[in-house]
Image (cartoon, rainbow, N blue to C red; front, top):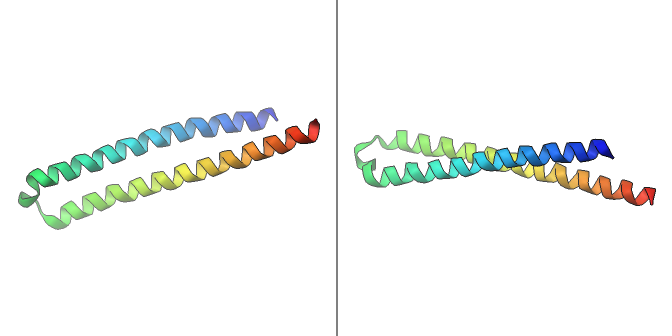
Length: 88
């Protein structure tokens, strides 16, 4: 059971890092859009679109990773509960 606890703690730390990256990504998306509102007419439209879509892809990848981490944590927690129930 100790290995499950250790793995769960690792996943929780990794999720915190991914969540921090996600927050940063969203902040930068907002900054890009704010800049576009102010200066977009002076910039090349397809370049702006490429940049915004690239950041969006990063956000989606981070959200997927976060979801996978949460799922793995749920499965480990379930296994811990099953193991605990089997020993009592």
